[in-house]
Length: 321
Image 1 (cartoon, rainbow, N blue to C red):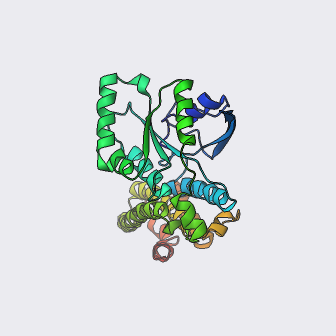
Image 2 (image 1 turned 90 degrees about the vertical axis):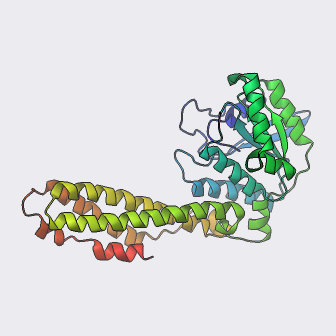
Image 3 (image 1 turned 135 degrees about the vertical axis):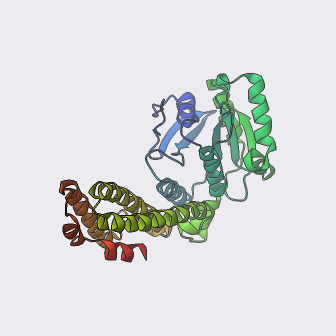
């Protein structure tokens, strides 16, 4: 586990020789879970490459949904992980918000007992040794970074960019005792909805904050649309209509993510996840039609036509849900 670009896929390729996608840009390559099996010390080893949170293409709720579904199904079928490997770039000169979120999500997924979590720092060949050791000391000694997890039983390891170093990490992981993760106990043993788990609650809190922000932005845009229509400012109406549609689509994605988190394990496995598309698609169609009319309208006298396509009532009803 870890952020995009920390070396998860590279590590798997290094130890297994398997052709796992490795990204060299900002976009995440690990869109879904990737599983690779190989042999080490006469034992069959399966590595599971997970997508990072703060992904360029998927929401945190989607990423957590994929991870929780696979982890829970594995546990329900009697399989447990020997270890969870969390990767962090030592070359980062500070702990970014994305890295901190990924670390806290890993911590929440693992649960209170972190004895089979190994925190691995990577990219040692991209940093001055003295600077790297200073960062390592800060990370391991700071409660909100690695320090708190180490106190709760997590292990720490440096990962050099060599196969020998990677295989040593595998050997270290094999010495740990397999045990269920926190999210597995929550969803399988306690039958909790994803949003009620520690990891799901963390994602849902952030989504709720974003939802409240988008609702406020939509209401503000709607009021500004009314003023622009009264002043017959067509250019401003066009800009506001585009802004409003963007806010609206963002709000719908947030609400769908929160619905995903509210589902039980059995519902997460259902391929046909029902969406509240009725009011959403109707309102979206109205917004797009109104935007097109604004694009075609002339600067003079558009107010009467636009009034006939008002979305105020439908939007207020949608925001109240």
